[in-house]
Length: 184
Image 1 (cartoon, rainbow, N blue to C red):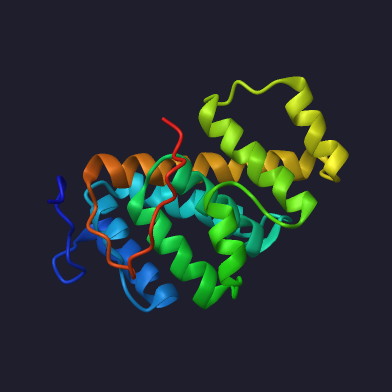
Image 2 (cartoon, rainbow, N blue to C red):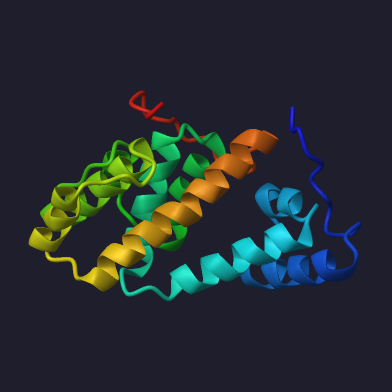
């Protein structure tokens, strides 16, 4: 059972109502994560701003979704795994094989694999990565911009994972199984 109330768009007031209206306009609905974040307009606005900034990152939407899947599974976040599986398949058009591989931090593409492995390492080591782990990304073809964006995507998704798990947000996306290799 959800630990924080999910505010219905019809009951929202003030800044939360305004933010819900922008989410509704963009997505066509207000998913439970947003409804729950709406308890604090500051939290919802902060998330939306960070998400918007990362949406314009040079890594692109596909890599952002693959990182989101890796992080969701590393953290055992059912909500984010379901949401990013849906978004990846239906909105970004990522093939099911790539989505399944990303859940365990893997990819058949070497450059993508390096990014997802690094994302998983960031979660596992709570950011305390080695110089060699960063150098592996450079060797795979990432610039400092790309590396910063990978870190940014991990941070954004780590936030939503923690929020959704702590609040036990009810999943309102089609069910997607977490991998068994979640980092603890």
